[in-house]
Length: 427
Ligand code: MTE
Ligand code: CO
Image (cartoon, rainbow, N blue to C red; front, top):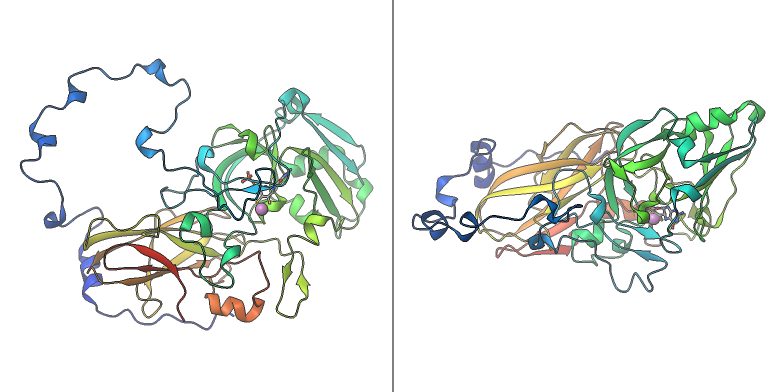
């Protein structure tokens, strides 16, 4: 589907010649905005004449008040109540790739529960040599690993199938976070219980469930369970927040967020999938003919420009402009991101801030000299399997309009000459 749209040769347009001339980190002096008689330079400021706060003021730090708008937000009509609820990461205002836990999106099917470490139990049962129950302390005594992975809700961008709908990248793409997890490989715990009783592991499954009322039960093929799945108890170095499944959650790299069971309480080894509610009536993709696809676990390669975007308009007028965004793939590492400013006529290879790593967010930049004209900004991700992110039209041709989940199409922002941005579709 996505193979047949090849790159067109870049045009020799002025702004990109300018971009090429700009060395990394250099800004044309004429576009710097402070003036010679700026009192912020010529006067001694109040904050230099008095002492600041002492170190005891914030035993656990919060962002400075000027950043108070950089918070999770929800969409009223999507969150009817706060029990089955969703909110979105403010990705328009973040840079780098790590999502601070304090503004990482949350999705709860029956609210966030408060579970003390002392009350935590993880059972492994079913086709194992010895059924086991681990306490939190037990988990801490197994060799642990650290990995950075993204978690994307299968419903991310799900409101955009039929047309451009939500005006902000936080709302169209913010059901994603990317953290450094510390945890014990699930493989280690399954081996502790012993898998001989299961016989040939091919065709075997695990069923995982959480301790909350929804239990959010999901079946996972044994091959994945023994590969890279983690039982994680730390994110970005600190304990998981209550809302992310404290004290322990499942991390299922690259696979839809729904499988990342929070407050993980049980892993059952089975010879067939359970076909639970969460994998039949939910988290399946209804196609144009009304048939539903199931087992669409991996999140396909996707990217989006986070700035400029509707919540992050251009405020500085024409001249040097940093275009920035995020790319990710549930099937491996991002190898390349292309950006267009003219709705796909010309594509330019973006600069990856760091080489892509497996199932983690990759930050990209395109530094241009903006001529002040309107732009139709898009980004297109490539992953290590050779897969290329499809356009909305290409995706609709295959999937129709009945789907909610797994919308990884190319997003368009219309950047107007006044710097404001709008979510649009172009064809
Ligand atoms: N696990 C439990 N126990 N209960 C839940 O409601 N929600 C799932 C998954 N795991 C859920 C759960 C869904 S749909 C998603 S997208 C992710 O958790 C969201 O994880 P987060 O809230 O840490 O962002
Ligand atoms: Co989800």
